[in-house]
Image (cartoon, rainbow, N blue to C red; front, top):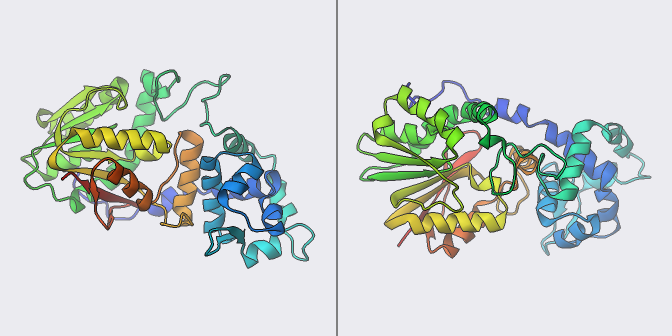
Length: 348
């Protein structure tokens, strides 16, 4: 299969619809469970103070408030404090003449709302509790993961391939890898991003590092694409396994699965694996610099929050981690597809 061929239609609306339930769940959670609008109607607060008032983590607060800002119900003032917008003030504060909070609250006991409230309060992804079956999308030592079980790993990996098949050709289109000898795709999953880049660059070789059950799917894709002779599949934990040196390291839709401390570790490890003059490519979704939206990315952030230990980040947050790892970040993000883009950090 030619993984450099672009789809003829844009699948972005389908992904937005698939994540649309989080808009309802976030709004209802804020109204009926956390009483966010009542608290902000009393006085503007910083995000840190609001998080403490709601008894939730900063990661939880970031996900919730980013969505509320993107919905146009909360805004951040020039001094950094959060306050209600006219929309939020008129319609979401109890006892107002045009209050609709009780209407929103009709869904307060819906399973999806209750599940999200639990995630926000515990700051843990679904399945990560001591009485739960294990996390689906992430692997870490000491945590049961569906990515370690053959049947579930295959099903989840093939599900994620649905996005990669549509986005990988755009990644191959925007990245100039002329003169690059070797690419390392960390947490490469299906291998589809590496495969697209191999097909677009005949002189390139690549390594995909991921869990063993996941790599079984990558092997099938690379064979079907005719690039298995140039693609090495290496089993390992990206937090602990030695990373082979490479001219370019790719982190495609990886960092959004992890909290800040883990992201900083991964970026530093990838920087250390780069040859001098090499590039670290962060391919991901990007929140606005002020973390106020856009709404589709804010809803995706809620999905990530519910299923992983991460959230969506801004380009500014990524740049901080790149600089801390000794890399020089580019000023712009190259757009790919489905709200994604590539931010490059160069090693001196």
